[in-house]
Length: 497
Image (cartoon, rainbow, N blue to C red):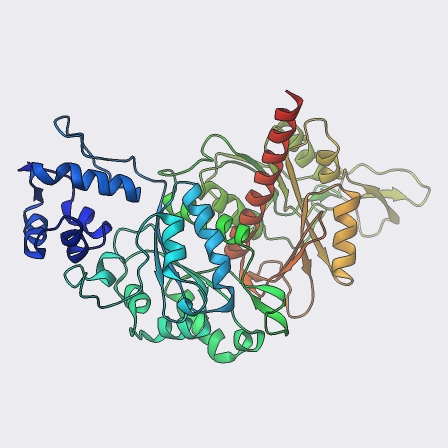
């Protein structure tokens, strides 16, 4: 007998003790003995090796056994368990599974009984070339304790679509099927993509349950708005599959930090944040109420993804984030100068609230006063407005324009119209729009509600989220757009060649 890597894992991935005993035409007790001793006879080595190749299993080891020809594949990028709960949008998850599989993710899938009303385990199996799990108790797998094994050693558990019923079960710890047992037994990060009728989504019970899950650290991919399968219009649609994939990928990259990242030392991000100050005299200046919190949150979350982040910040009263490069400025002209020096980047995000004007003091005889001398109360003077440079327009029209230019628009009325106008006039790829009103003051607050508008005319509205949640949503959307531009440019170059 020879020693091998994690024999119990191999048997589990081949379907369990009962399944392997049938495949090898031997007794279940023999398989159990292999698992206990973590050993297997040479005579069965080739058979198991063949079975693993057929099922394209990802078994990996920290060491090599040069004496063995046992089939070992390299470790996949991430290990994900997808729980599909019952909803009309179930069929869309098949495309998500295909995307994960295509991009070398190690995937396990659980189908709830309700989900099986819409799709079958056979369809899932054909996509991932391995068993799709459905039952909490199985005569073939009684020794494996599926809800424990499936809950362990996962980078992420994704519930998609996640119904109102499954959200309620997660909240109150109900464990009446395989999926809900896995959630209770898991020590992995959990992410949910809800999908349900708009009234079910807005119901206080659902919203209260979501708040409890958030406090427990469960991640949320907010549903989209639009016409539902039932014919009603509102929020509750399963987000587009590309969005779920990008969000999940970004979520995993953030979780892994520098361990797993395709962006490290590759994707360069330039962000402006905070207000600017325009000097009137040595004591006074003109500024605004921007706290810098949203720009700092973006910088921090991009850094967690492994991106190379340069932050240009106006004066703020909050703790400066740890980034690759931090540049502090005061005026709009100073900010423009630093943006120009660091314009060699992939994504530029103009989150700073740049003062639109300088206030230049003049005597009543129209003589310009120096801002080096303090203005006296008894003196008569007036101010002329002088426009500050348009930083984001400068970036958009620059020969070294980044692949993606993103702006912010804070408005008090006609939000969508004014934000879209800014998007077009400044030649932006995306704009994040805020409506400043009594219930959404924004500046200095921890929460915000935004609209994301891209140049294709797509508009996405969020509910009130923390600024770090908004940062992650913007990052997910940014990476999605960046990837599309990259693929498009690559295709053009290929055709040209």
